[in-house]
Length: 327
Image (tube, rainbow, N blue to C red; front, side):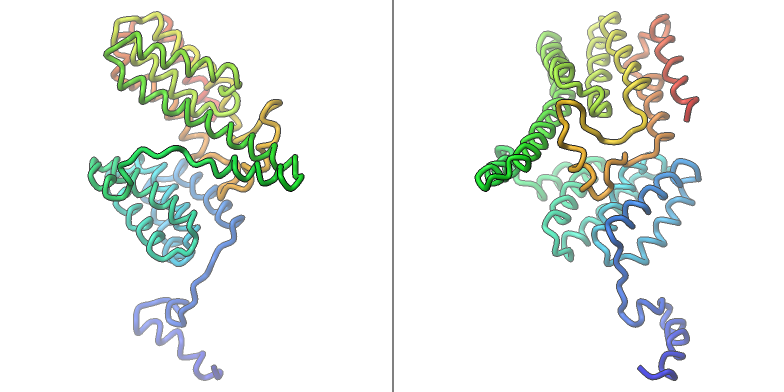
């Protein structure tokens, strides 16, 4: 293109009401590290500015990188994790669906498309449209894929013993998280049968204790304690409910922060795996918002209305607010 032609670009862009990048068909892409850094900045804006200000910043970036599908996927995750800060979360979920549909239809990355499908299904559930989830997902109950275990066997077969160990640790860690995470809703579904519900909660806590999951993934184990407390309250077993809330409070005080994914002496090969995530080992929300939700999960939970006059309950709320004062 000659020099005189270049000078016309701003005028042409103005005439067609588009940016110069759009006019010449330039589609900027972000590296994985750039996406991770932007996400970190944006989640802090959501924590410290008005929701509308944060969304305006996000939408500008979204417009600029509308053809960078890994970035759009992380934006959908960002919106989903902060939608409840909005006065109209429904609109946020609907926008997330627009993004996930764009990713699924245009991205050539199979994993991004799969993750987008899962996010889209989550949004439909939050919108109260389960039948649309059924349209997206296969109704059949399939066994969990053992791709990671198969990869471990491949590593072992070619003599890469350390690679096999890494893969098996990642598989075990994920299966543990699935078991603990699924135990909470399963217990709630069985809440009318206190014996069954208590058995589910107890077995989940046994796994938590054996594998040190309070330290490894407190965000998941917290759900078990809150769920257990709710079920015990339903059956008038306030003392057991408070036992659960005190355990919840302990991990909020001692296990959550700094909130980064990490291994331990047993899972000593998973830290490198975390760093391969699109967001690395960081949490999807800022510590400030996480602490706020910790307190609200107890203080504003209607299931605990019958505990409000209990000294132990008041002590729990005070301790949780003490965590909040640090952030």
